[in-house]
Image (cartoon, rainbow, N blue to C red; front, side, top):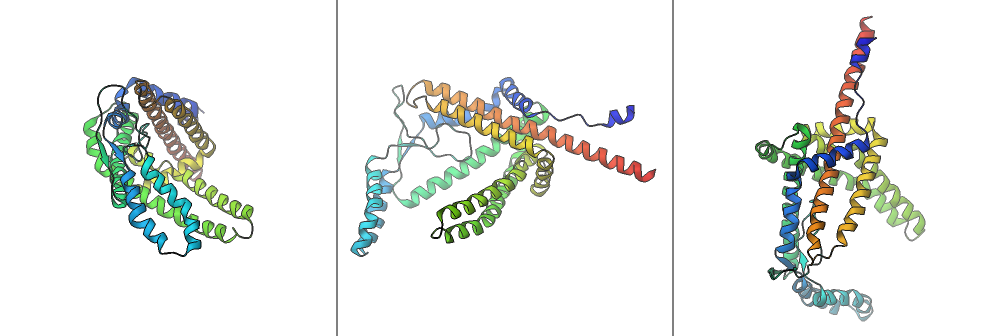
Amino acid sequence: MESEKANTPTPPVGVIESLTRGFETVAGSLVLILLPLLLDLFLWVGPRLDFRPAFASYYYDLWEPMVASMDTEMQSGLKQFGDQILELSETMPDQYLPIFGMPSLMAWREAEPLPFGYIPPVWEVRTSVDVLGANVLSLLAGFVLFGCYITVIAERVKSGKTKFGRVLARLPINLIWLGLFFVTAFIILFLIYIPFLLVSASFLLVSELLSAVINFLGLILIFWIAAYVVFTIHGIFLNERGLFRSLWDSIRVVQWNMPQTITLFLLVAILSTALSRIWLLAPVGSWTALLAIGGNAFVQTGLIAATFFYYKDRYRYWQESRAEMLARLEQHRIQ
């Protein structure tokens, strides 16, 4: 009886305890928020982007000649859209630099004058090719920064310390696996969603309600599949495993803990969205923006760390439960 008790796996931490551990870890090691904090500070005081020349170039060089070559009936139908492009080319405000992936408060927002004397430079984006280039560069920059950020958090959750030597050593392979995961997941989920999209479009003229239901079912299926693979990143960064082993681990952990996993990510989404709306109330052109930047970096890092604590302990519990089950089967076989 005592032997059975000793071999029984320790129950995993709950959702609330995972959230608590995440925020406690960040509060005890503020170096974890350094990257999103510095990124937003750079965006706040750094160069801004002016997309007005690109919209003007697109309108006068491409849109206007294309519309002029059409018949009068089609021209009138496209006029409203052309007016919107022309309005953007005249009134669109400067933007902070776009950064994908990182939990940034400033990225993509309308820029405002700083509350002190410094006037940041403005980079003009003149053509559609420049717009594409800016987005590709921001995607690559966000990808690398996100990899660094998650590697630091995972190292802290795993060892209780922030070992920057190990972070730098693991970063290249982490980025490779992360890139493969994003590309593979996007392709697979897109291929799964295409049939629903095509069927939904074919039913659009028959019944808008039926079309919307089919499209909704497709999105539900995508969400269900994504829920099973959501911890693949955690396996790559925390357990230092390859893509497919991490993917399998994610499926098994979620399979054992689906209700708790959905609860965790719902709470993370609610807290992230609600608090982000509070930070967005601070005008970006005032000193209160600094408080909002700090608050956002702390909260987002705490929520991400919480998901790592949750996965770490649920993975441990799954492994121990599996070992216990195999041991019992072996014991019954011998008897």
